[in-house]
Image 1 (spheres, one colour):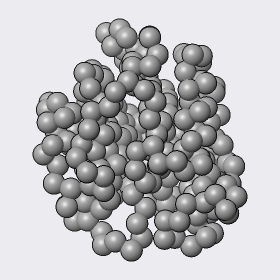
Image 2 (cartoon, one colour):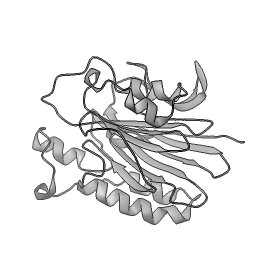
Image 3 (cartoon, helix red, strand yellow):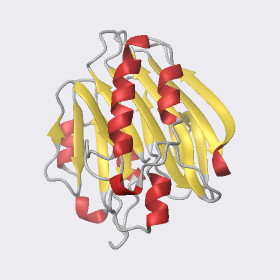
Image 4 (spheres, rainbow, N blue to C red):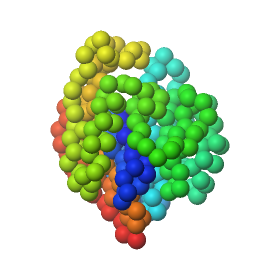
Length: 249
């Protein structure tokens, strides 16, 4: 997952709203959002290579999403980062208690958002201790929370403008589909070749081998209902399928 914008207790009718793009190599096998066969309360995609997920939510509104920290020179961690989200979604610990017990040394660099309905927690093994977030709009890409990367700043602004229109989804999927490439002088320097910095500077990434595999919008109503809408993509941004799952109370 390479772009996540979260509205936490900002909208009066939707306490949790999430717009996210998952960027990955197209060759990595995965399945689209569904109720998990071994944990039917969880709704999310599945990484079929390592068994975890980039984003998921339970019928009760327990939420988790993860991004990697872009650091190409670092050694790979022993455990998949997607296991963090799977473990939280299938547990019953509070977000703060779960975050406090993570052994960050077992993973490559990660950013993790955990929601339990009462709190939203951010933790990273590259950014100090976990912290509980106040109501607001937050963004993650492949650095730390709210790093001022151009695509993240733009996505947060467009997300804030889209919030009053819910349950209309159009503006959220428009921001996730933004293919604007940032000018070289404004690119972050993350250790990858300049061609990759350009490619990854767009909110929606597309190429022959790597790009945005899924755009996802999640929101939880004040009444406890949950809706997750995912659009899937193939090489060069080819649209594949659209899936919507909603729960009732």
